[in-house]
Length: 128
Image (cartoon, rainbow, N blue to C red; front, side):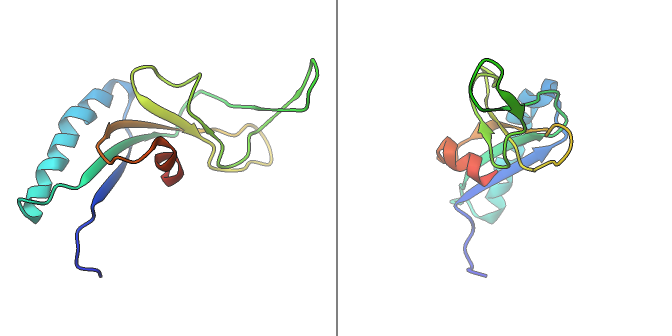
């Protein structure tokens, strides 16, 4: 439409287990980067690769009220948790992307395995 190639490319990848994160970060990122040469030698977009994991055991609750026994409830859609329960060796975060009427909401885990996009973490979380 605008006859230009994108300056940034963000790849969201599903179906990757914890044991395959380094493989994706090394092998698949390298393959993706090599494909850009087909669009011209000078084309080097800023790229990020994010692993999306929906099948996780973590559950996140929001405290409602004060006192010794506050009520625990599901956090609202759009809630991001990027500290405390995240990994030390990866840039990752949890996002509550849906509202449930019954039961416990399941967050989605995003693990950024490669990031040369120069996006601030806040922007990456909003994009997700």
